[in-house]
Length: 207
Image (cartoon, rainbow, N blue to C red; front, side):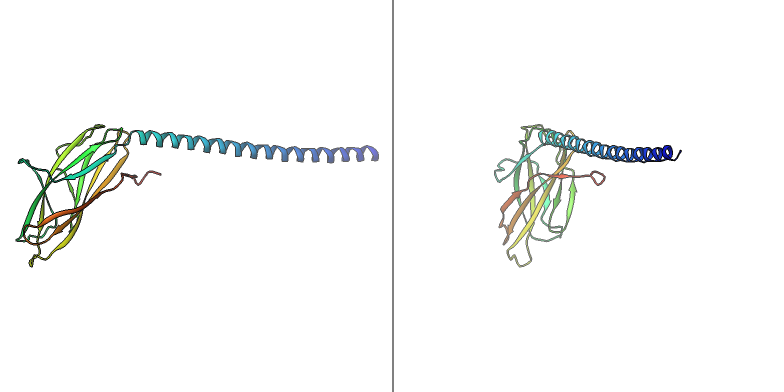
């Protein structure tokens, strides 16, 4: 009985050791399988992100914006002030701003905000809201440049912020920065302008 008991104990110990090794091997396999699954999921997520980004770029409107001074005939212009103060002396200069969609996607919900020396003001006076690929529109503006009381020269940096969406509901903005030189009565020029690259506007609830 002693010998049988000893053999039984040894066998039980060996079985327990085998079970422990088997359990460790199973845990290792489970961990390896989880790592592999996580890696595949990460790869799929990255592939999905790259696909969606490629699709977004393909559908993204892109604008060429040029400021012209070739207004010859009478046209109805949109009035914009360099500042909001009621100065007695001001000079109006008109400019044509051409906007062309050189991207591959349609732009919709097109609007803009005018930022002068006193603040930024959303506008709703363009008369259109969409751009097809390759389409070009001209907008005519009267800029009211107010002079200082002593007519001393100063520089005014203002901007138009254009907002629009693509057909995938991605929202963008592009900024047209304008630099005015305002001197004595009647002397007003746009000395420089610069157009930013489109910036994607991310919603607060998006990742």
